[in-house]
Length: 557
Ligand code: ATP
Ligand code: MG
Image (cartoon, rainbow, N blue to C red; front, side, top):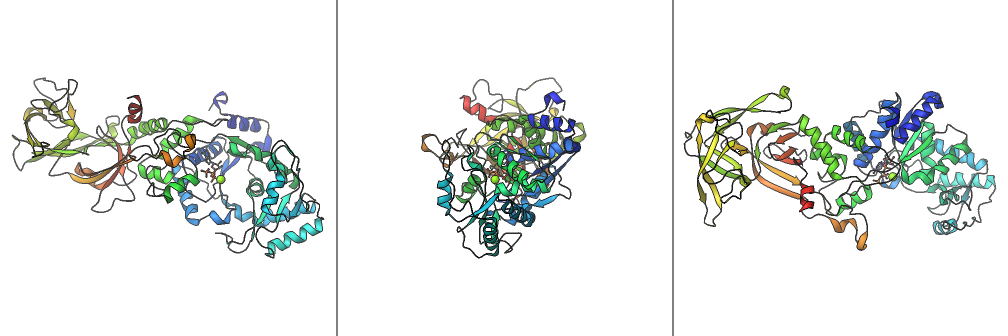
């Protein structure tokens, strides 16, 4: 990347390297809190942090920010590791947990107390909140603010030893109760929480706050650039204050805009709500913006990385279009997906002049854009399935597919002409009788005659049956979180975001499809096997994305 094309974060780092700051060393970290699954917003942060390390010949750590014992879970830790690896990044031997630093963080708290820069406050949570005040007017100093160092030290030790109830004392930094920035009005550094931690067990009953843990963890790991999202701008003065008071290695915090995508919500808390209320089947529901959900849906890591690169890194929050993500995805899938034929809404076609009991293998191209993908053989016989939408009894002018008396091409096979339509008692078409022209094998007429329509098909005798799931946006409203009209995001759920089609008929080679392998079903879109619900004897496919932006079309109507 040339310097002028760099985003502002990379510009800062380039300048730091040029100035010899940290001896030109670049070391970043990705610090997830293990309280939920990663979503595509996190992917942006992962790509940024690991990407910077790669580009600048530096390193990037994976650090679990596990300072909050109540909400965290080992299950999340493992899944987050898998997601980061799946995206294509490697923390090598640098997997860390903020909880590994609990002792050091405590020792540093003792140092602050000894310096007279922290004190034990024995007010209630409510009193502390009130005393902090609001912007525009100064807060009120705690009556405990001027405790002696010795008294503070004694109380802190006893807090740690478990002598006090939750909520009876906290440790606060002694900064400035009149500060304009509320976070500097003697922020809380430690709370009493008598709960076990998923890694440290019962060892601690006081836990550090984010503000006390984060910067110091960065410092311990010798992080040079601590890249985080904009909501931490107000925290930066506190981040700096702590490191300066402790006189330890001082990383630089840099904030960038969170990724938001329309028709979606992105916070773990809200995603959890969706799961708990049963609006989706789980964190890995293919409609979710979680990386496990997207992986199951058939997104490729390359497409997600490309998207993150494409949207860039900004200083102001904005909302990106879902259609852009889908565009990038299609581009990637187009390159790496083999073509297959599949009929999702089948209607039977019988070729009256094709010998009964005969079948033949016809050659089909796996990827017209990639010769190395080769060819495959597709079985053909007297009875076929085509898409119900590819036949119309009474077609409008511009309809070029099958209709009574009309000739069309079956892709890679023959020209067929519709001779007769069979209906059930309700008048619905149940079968179409066609003739085929044996001279058009492979899909071209030797006499040079042309047809306007080419449709896909599968041989009924050879087809495998599958369930196909098609997805639409989870939220109808492009901005479900706006809170307009007093509505919450849950009020904007799209009731039709999942459409399940049973008895879809696929060409037989798809029987052995495996999850993670993308396919283009000709004329329909990109699909993959569902990793959760497919099982021997039960084939389930997800539509990853359509061939075109159907949502944009819908909006225009
Ligand atoms: P959420 O609001 O979804 O719960 P979070 O910020 O609480 O997210 P963390 O686990 O604390 O989640 O985030 C880990 C890292 O990922 C942080 O550095 C955070 O800034 C970054 N991150 C989280 N969400 C986004 C997003 N939408 N865009 C970019 N970065 C994000
Ligand atoms: Mg968080």
